[in-house]
Image 1 (spheres, helix red, strand yellow):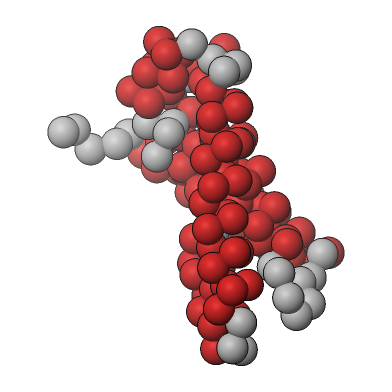
Image 2 (cartoon, helix red, strand yellow; image 1 turned 30 degrees about the vertical axis):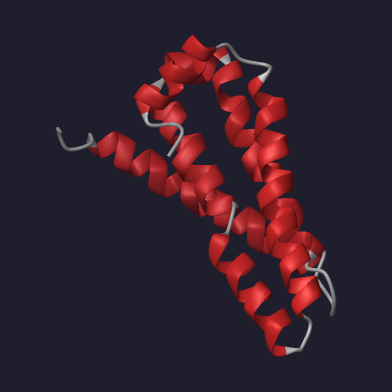
Length: 137
Protein backbone atom coordinates (compact mmCIF):
# COMPACT_ATOMS: atom_id res chain seq x y z
CA UNK A 1 0.00 0.00 0.00
CA UNK A 2 1.37 3.38 -0.94
CA UNK A 3 1.54 6.10 1.70
CA UNK A 4 -1.14 8.79 1.47
CA UNK A 5 -0.31 12.00 -0.31
CA UNK A 6 0.43 14.95 1.99
CA UNK A 7 -2.64 16.79 0.65
CA UNK A 8 -4.84 13.86 1.72
CA UNK A 9 -3.34 13.79 5.20
CA UNK A 10 -3.85 17.55 5.41
CA UNK A 11 -7.44 17.24 4.21
CA UNK A 12 -8.22 14.64 6.88
CA UNK A 13 -6.52 16.72 9.59
CA UNK A 14 -8.29 19.94 8.62
CA UNK A 15 -11.62 18.15 8.25
CA UNK A 16 -11.14 16.40 11.59
CA UNK A 17 -10.51 19.73 13.30
CA UNK A 18 -13.67 21.19 11.77
CA UNK A 19 -15.72 18.16 12.83
CA UNK A 20 -14.35 18.18 16.38
CA UNK A 21 -15.06 21.91 16.78
CA UNK A 22 -18.60 21.40 15.49
CA UNK A 23 -19.18 18.51 17.90
CA UNK A 24 -17.80 20.55 20.81
CA UNK A 25 -19.97 23.55 19.90
CA UNK A 26 -23.09 21.38 19.79
CA UNK A 27 -22.16 19.83 23.14
CA UNK A 28 -21.83 23.30 24.64
CA UNK A 29 -25.01 24.63 23.05
CA UNK A 30 -27.09 21.60 23.99
CA UNK A 31 -25.44 20.24 27.12
CA UNK A 32 -26.84 16.96 28.38
CA UNK A 33 -28.13 17.00 31.92
CA UNK A 34 -28.63 13.83 33.86
CA UNK A 35 -30.41 11.09 32.02
CA UNK A 36 -30.23 10.11 28.38
CA UNK A 37 -27.28 11.76 26.55
CA UNK A 38 -29.35 13.15 23.70
CA UNK A 39 -26.69 15.45 22.26
CA UNK A 40 -24.07 12.75 21.72
CA UNK A 41 -26.78 10.40 20.48
CA UNK A 42 -27.92 12.97 17.89
CA UNK A 43 -24.34 13.74 16.85
CA UNK A 44 -23.48 10.07 16.27
CA UNK A 45 -26.69 9.24 14.42
CA UNK A 46 -26.52 12.35 12.22
CA UNK A 47 -22.84 11.62 11.54
CA UNK A 48 -23.63 8.06 10.49
CA UNK A 49 -26.38 9.35 8.21
CA UNK A 50 -24.10 11.98 6.67
CA UNK A 51 -21.28 9.48 6.11
CA UNK A 52 -23.68 7.10 4.38
CA UNK A 53 -24.94 9.97 2.19
CA UNK A 54 -21.48 10.90 0.86
CA UNK A 55 -21.60 8.41 -2.06
CA UNK A 56 -24.81 10.08 -3.29
CA UNK A 57 -22.87 13.33 -3.89
CA UNK A 58 -21.20 13.42 -7.30
CA UNK A 59 -18.65 16.00 -6.14
CA UNK A 60 -17.47 13.63 -3.41
CA UNK A 61 -17.19 10.73 -5.86
CA UNK A 62 -15.05 12.86 -8.21
CA UNK A 63 -12.57 14.11 -5.61
CA UNK A 64 -10.45 11.85 -3.42
CA UNK A 65 -9.40 14.88 -1.39
CA UNK A 66 -13.01 15.88 -0.72
CA UNK A 67 -13.96 12.27 0.09
CA UNK A 68 -11.29 11.96 2.77
CA UNK A 69 -11.81 15.51 4.05
CA UNK A 70 -15.50 14.87 4.64
CA UNK A 71 -15.50 11.16 5.55
CA UNK A 72 -12.68 10.36 7.95
CA UNK A 73 -11.99 14.08 8.38
CA UNK A 74 -15.11 16.08 9.25
CA UNK A 75 -17.37 13.17 10.09
CA UNK A 76 -14.61 11.26 11.89
CA UNK A 77 -13.99 14.31 14.07
CA UNK A 78 -17.70 15.01 14.48
CA UNK A 79 -18.79 11.57 15.65
CA UNK A 80 -17.51 10.15 18.90
CA UNK A 81 -17.43 6.57 20.04
CA UNK A 82 -15.32 7.51 23.06
CA UNK A 83 -17.97 9.88 24.44
CA UNK A 84 -20.66 7.28 23.85
CA UNK A 85 -18.63 4.69 25.73
CA UNK A 86 -17.88 7.10 28.58
CA UNK A 87 -21.51 8.13 28.89
CA UNK A 88 -22.59 4.48 28.96
CA UNK A 89 -20.02 3.79 31.68
CA UNK A 90 -21.20 6.83 33.63
CA UNK A 91 -24.81 5.65 33.50
CA UNK A 92 -23.69 2.25 34.81
CA UNK A 93 -21.76 3.96 37.63
CA UNK A 94 -24.92 5.88 38.52
CA UNK A 95 -26.74 2.57 38.96
CA UNK A 96 -28.78 2.98 35.77
CA UNK A 97 -28.02 -0.16 33.77
CA UNK A 98 -31.31 -0.13 31.85
CA UNK A 99 -30.71 3.45 30.68
CA UNK A 100 -27.09 2.62 29.81
CA UNK A 101 -28.19 -0.37 27.73
CA UNK A 102 -30.94 1.66 26.07
CA UNK A 103 -28.48 4.41 25.21
CA UNK A 104 -25.73 2.16 23.87
CA UNK A 105 -27.99 -0.20 21.93
CA UNK A 106 -30.24 2.66 20.82
CA UNK A 107 -27.26 4.54 19.41
CA UNK A 108 -26.08 1.49 17.49
CA UNK A 109 -29.49 0.52 16.15
CA UNK A 110 -30.55 4.05 15.22
CA UNK A 111 -27.24 4.69 13.45
CA UNK A 112 -27.68 1.44 11.51
CA UNK A 113 -31.20 2.50 10.48
CA UNK A 114 -29.83 5.90 9.40
CA UNK A 115 -27.15 4.22 7.28
CA UNK A 116 -29.68 1.85 5.74
CA UNK A 117 -32.00 4.71 4.83
CA UNK A 118 -29.16 6.84 3.43
CA UNK A 119 -27.81 3.97 1.35
CA UNK A 120 -31.02 4.04 -0.69
CA UNK A 121 -29.91 7.40 -2.13
CA UNK A 122 -26.80 5.98 -3.75
CA UNK A 123 -26.08 3.03 -5.99
CA UNK A 124 -23.65 0.23 -5.04
CA UNK A 125 -21.10 1.42 -7.62
CA UNK A 126 -21.23 4.96 -6.17
CA UNK A 127 -20.61 3.59 -2.69
CA UNK A 128 -17.71 1.50 -4.05
CA UNK A 129 -16.18 4.61 -5.64
CA UNK A 130 -16.20 6.53 -2.35
CA UNK A 131 -14.90 3.48 -0.47
CA UNK A 132 -12.03 3.14 -2.93
CA UNK A 133 -11.12 6.80 -2.38
CA UNK A 134 -11.00 6.29 1.39
CA UNK A 135 -14.06 8.40 2.15
CA UNK A 136 -15.79 5.68 4.12
CA UNK A 137 -13.17 5.25 6.83
